[in-house]
Image (cartoon, rainbow, N blue to C red):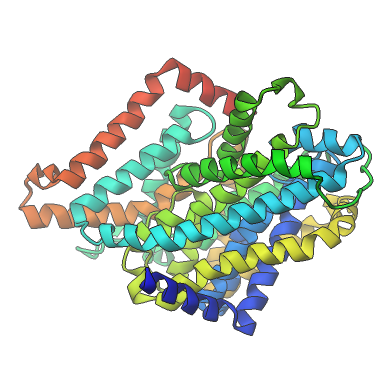
Length: 499
């Protein structure tokens, strides 16, 4: 306990340096802006900003990207409540009761509930990461190559099971990601694989070009083809305060939402959107008057807002403790670490303690910043919605091209960016989920390396996968596959997809 407290104190010292405070503030501000504007989500934004992290210190780069992520989860609630326009997918549920509260003259109460619930969830989840992350890291250090391979298989299967859309398309995206991850010179033999004689591909495909193309460029172009959403009239903001009755009803819902979000965020393939839907369903089932939901129930704001913030932060646990990104946003974080030559692994806390604990401490600092800076800026965020998207997209595209060129000063990478952008547009129009593609691209080379190591250690004998840890992970993988066959789970998954 004392070691963890001293590590947290050291992390606060790292996060509280002026430059890291600036990066934290910048990330939270950009994240809120992205959350407010419909269309551009945190994944696309982080993908577009990924090349900039090349010029930052690793700790500052990750702190800024983390701030963008949970800032976007927070920012989406503002326009969801005031205009019934969810800036982020995880804020769709907030529209149901938040906008109804605003229509009844309680917009300030709904905004304050969302802010305080998010801050409570962020604080609790940060403590969970601080106390349980090192324990998971210690357990993961017992893993060998066979155990790591099984863990990565579990992560990819979970990405398929919990991904939105067709299962067949999710499997196809996993296979495509594994194939793209194998491009380049073979580590053991030095022979080229899938380079087709192109010398620039010998080092493999860069995560920046892939992620910026399929998420950033594709999202920008597709948004131009969509008519801008018309929300209702902006509701006036009342006093930002809660009555005693509001407190009594909101804080248990926020606590329950935090627990649901933390659990679903840790699971491979979990997401903030899944957490917010689950929290809303739980509150409606537990309520003594479920008919109030959809009519302005404060629990319908507190629970989902706490859940999506907790889910966003809890997803850091698998990456920091196990080195396994649990969703596409964490894949972006892993990509930023790889750009700086840092391999996500269970040894991160011992090899890079300043980065590990500084990032954890910055989560609480960032949530405090979100609470302090955003409520006064509500009017500004709403006015930004009036800017036509067609005026913003040329600057976004130019920024993407300059950013990807600046990584290696390579025109070939700009061409790859365009190619992946076109591929992202086609895959999106075909309703193919892109998150499994990026996860498989990140995990594929590590899976191959660990499988080869395991086979070399065992002399080609498969008995190396019979260890208790491997068996447990393979059983969990089989359980996920069985879940797909359960009718009730398939119906729940279909409702999530339709929503």
